[in-house]
Image 1 (cartoon, rainbow, N blue to C red):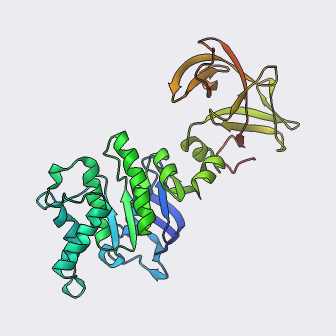
Image 2: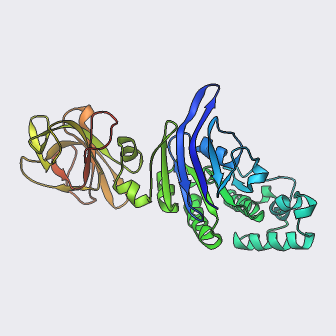
Image 3: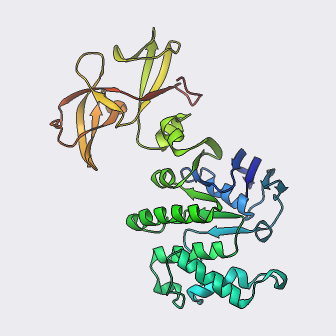
Length: 350
């Protein structure tokens, strides 16, 4: 099922939560709505679900305008962060619920409902637990039940709102892999809301990065990470540092010295963005140079904070874990991959 969000605006008490948002979601893809709190991602998900109505604009399911349709008419499967399971029902009864309450004309037989629910419990690796109650399961197991319940109604679109937000880090990692496998097996069009960049990069076919009620960028995880189109996306997706620089006759300068990289852009002020791992250590004057202010271990590397001219000019770079640099030592480096943006949030310079 394709979903098309067309020029949607949503206001709450005249406050705009979404500004003229348009997004095409392909049939069978898993797309992540990613952004900080207040970016509008959950509002967009609720509009797709039919839990909210747009102030302006339309939402299409396939070729059909679904903007005024109810949740039931849209045939949506919804998985919430806090499971929303019925505590007084067994696991089997929870999974069966959506089918049990269908109108008589479209309701399967009791035998068929039971068969389908047991089949889904097997799919989510909970076979043998159908007689238990939610309180007898772990958080990860409860979230699997919630997904099975959402899948039971054979939804046209599956929506997940921060589904792993209440779980610890290890369980989240395990369920991310499991959800990707489930999606690949079932092929549902899936929209996934998260503020966790790592989660989105690992799970999604495409990312829709949002900020302040607008879409900043849509693309594959590799495209969004490697080719961010705005300072916000560069700073939000992965680790990064930024420095105020000037372009003079094709060379990039920090203060009164060139830093050894060039740009074909016109002369003027800019901001230089780069990631901690995209640097090379160098010797010589044409480089960025700073004093080690602090360091910490990040996996198999050492993340070093360098002071290259006061607290406003501190950057982070990654060094091999056994690098001899100590506090107050001097390090010179040059970004290998970088991007220039204007001093204000305008389109990128390169």
